[in-house]
Amino acid sequence: MSKKYILGVVLFVFAALFVLGGAWIYSKYRQQSNVRGEYMFATTRGKISYLGRISITTPQNGEINIYRVSDGSWRFKEANDYYINENMLASFYRMVKNSVIVTVQSSDEDFLEKNDLNAGKGTEIKTYDFDGNLLDYVILGKRANEQHLVLARNGINPLYAFGISSVEDFSGLAQAWIPYPLLNIKTAEIKAVTINGKKTDYQEFNYLLNHSGAWRDFARALDFLDYQGLTLKSDLADLPADTKVRKIDVLMLTGMFYKLTIFNFSGAYWLVVSMDAKKVFMVDAISVAAENYKYYADWVFQLSDEQGKALFSDALTD
Image (cartoon, rainbow, N blue to C red; front, side):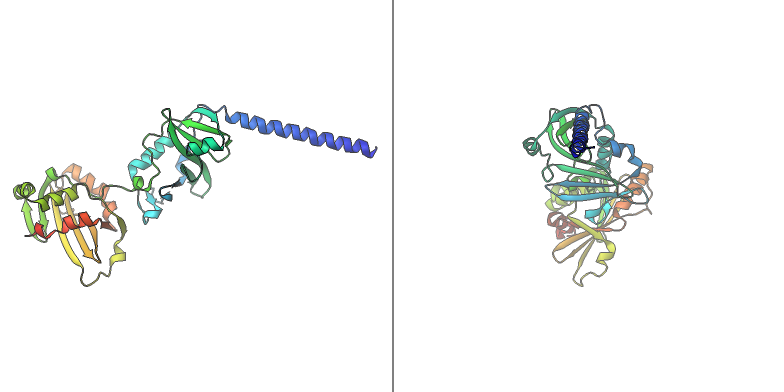
């Protein structure tokens, strides 16, 4: 067999492999344009019981990590492993379970840039199982025609962008995953307030609300009390000698009883919350107390200066 013949056979084989490879790649890419009706987060959806971590990256916050612990609860790693907003987690689950690809369109770098579908511009969502294996990697871009444009990064052709349904109120922003507000005590439901041992009953409390700006600021703070940061109670074991302390007890008409302790030191206000179970609770108050206890049990919350001053005002005890 001549060398010329052998060389011809080799070239033919390489050419055949090249054609077959190109046809396979083309077929693979064409398949990605025919995925309408499929689930965007298909892998996560199929292994939802094994979902262990959600990594979300936005231009505003950078990367945040939401992870599940052994008792089944979810925590926020970058927020000192605090609990997450259950409503946002539910929204995430709805998106995973119901987001169907409804449109497919070709894309190029210009299209990706304009629609926030590049890393660093859109909302990057990565899901992992308990062993740390990547399930899905999706970039959520701009909203268009009642849909959200997305780009899948794990195995689906990046030449195509997809429009998906059922994103609803999902957000990748860090503040959306924090359980706000810390306290939401409605003024009309307060039965009595005791500040550093001085009790104000229902009638006097409502009178003061109509005649004192300090008491109105106090009630406004309780109505929507948020926090700037948090730490474990054990981290504040040794407080400075000049720390000021204010104790506020709030008894609700339902029987709920909040005990607030505010520390003022180094120009900052920190709050400890507990719920007194010694009082006679109504049935709904018992369930509310049990549900919310975990949010307060081991934590100290840093208040804004405005809210800290409202709760610490000397006018409240004059």
